Length: 233
Image (cartoon, rainbow, N blue to C red; front, top):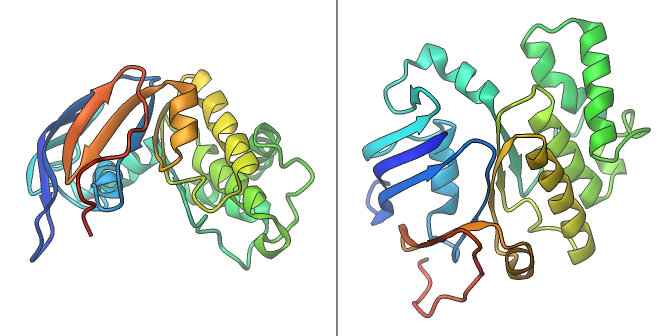
């Protein structure tokens, strides 16, 4: 369970990036997080991994209050949450296998277990046979598949995807969404920030719309509506 209780976040010298957000996301749900640039989507996701702390309110992930948990426990929170980025954030001097396996190595997993697990997730994302490739040898879609594999290899219960299709052509974007949808069907909670209106409208998933840091709407089967309000810079 993800829970925001009256959460606000203000950065120095700016208006609230998020203002009095209260929302719950049950385990196993797929949620689109939408809104214009500057609406607060990335701030919402960063709060969940304790990359930043709220100015007011509480962020809960399962039994943890992310705001008050000790720093010594943050690594446990981040094992529970996998993150997929728009710009991939792959290590360019490491192969697909090495990028995906890094988190397992840091966690001290046995080499044979790492090899098996990485092979399984690369098959899931459609990259079997690409384990020795470097990022420069991959297409943008393959790099994002690698990013997804890295995010899920440790078996997180939550995956956060911040504009994961933003740099991709429409066909590849749908392929990436399909992979995230399959991960969700396995029981993983997926929260996907996106500007892809056709995807949101066609899939009719729960959709939380942010505008100027506030929840504009929260619909069980949402649609992407262009805000009539001016965009926040």
